[in-house]
View 1 (cartoon, rainbow, N blue to C red):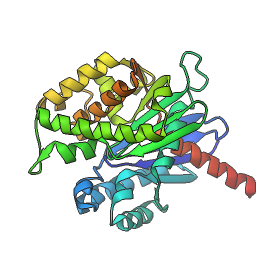
View 2 (view 1 turned 30 degrees about the vertical axis):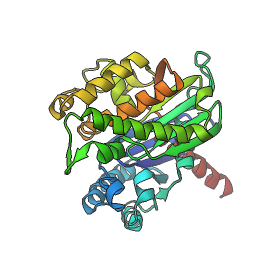
View 3 (view 1 turned 135 degrees about the horizontal axis):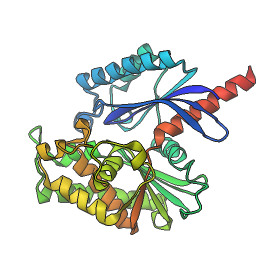
Length: 323
């Protein structure tokens, strides 16, 4: 099996997966998986540019990842950049920095491409599960955008909309550069109005109501799941494929929106980089569940990153066959 490295650079975090991957089946033998919160999308919604300090945080993570990739001997790297770098005026600066450090140019992908990778990564293990009804609705809640994908064994329809935990926090929950702690009802209503409008856009091209199983991805969803499960430490095995009820999501969302920074930071499973944005991220998940009437969400630790790695393995195998 080809040994590959997949990198997913989003608005809030940058993640690395190094794995041996069978491109035919999508089977992954994971060698290293890690995440660093870099907030690349800091103030992008307001300024339209990537901040110098955000770029440096991202480049520092890239340098650390380059060492891991070299040590493990990955033969192919695929670096995918999503919402924040799509929107930024100075994205060329970001592209040059990544190329200098990792030797590959980041692919600034479209929302539709992002959705397809997410679907592949999230559902490859689920497509043969006879206890889950199809079609799936895969919802990937990122920092700057949320992807909606409906499909059974393959993607039927997808849409990316500009609501994410960082974007909603910076747009509605920050006053004079400081996150309101906790947010007011008016601020929460403003976030919810944006989410509902985005759901209207998504529903115009993706048959959300036809979904029979909701699959939730990314840090906001996995953090909500970890809190709902009462974990005392983050445990990806316990979270992966857990089923979190609507009532649990509603309770955790309410608690996150009513708590202070210190109270959220004290939660054992809370990553420091999510303390200020988890309320908005949880609210996106809750709104989705209410829109489609979902009684539960199946939580996946496998997502766009796994889809990127699978695609890198397919490319590596294609090169082997042609040589």
